[in-house]
Image (cartoon, rainbow, N blue to C red):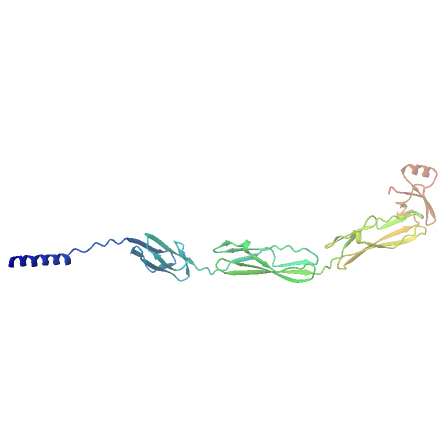
Length: 310
């Protein structure tokens, strides 16, 4: 009986010992590798390591002096990055140099342009470049206007900003001056016209142009008359003014009653006479001839002749 009790006690002891002296259970948790790095211009708070599935990891990017954080390679834009571990990852922080250099903006043409009132202002513009962004000419903002109908000084401003907000500007002065140039008026034909008595005067007129207003011929005002029934000297005046009042004039002289005029000694010219016309000049009667009629007059001993051929 005692032997059975001892065996029972030994069995209970072995059972108890088996429950509390077993080997440790193997850790089967999944692990992933995270690698963090930084490009030139900054650093990251950790290079990474081995992390469990579902674990939350936070990493921070810090820029160096003269740089700013520009983003993580996974697209995150904040400098502090939080990752829920689910796979192996390699993530890089990027940094950019702080741009403190202003764009360069340059006027095309002169900084001062002078116009006459009424002219058209064509803006030659400006060009702009940046050390980082390159050609910025198409982004230039122009402000200011020029009223060419009013005299005065006008300012045109050209401004540009780069991607980081650095800005620069230049200005151009446009001066609109009063028009002080008189129109140009020109007689059509000769300035002196000779008419025989009774011959109708046909005015050949004049033409006029202006540096601003252009052709002003239709605006010419003609004054003066010619009485072809009375010998004498008459004046015809042609006047014109531009839009701002600058004026000009020319005069034509019309001589009535003299068919011939001495040009050189012993010679005369009759530009408006007809062959056979006569005129008394200084008490001498002159006859107008052409080449065929000269021989006839000379044969008749008439040597006081005027020819239109000279």
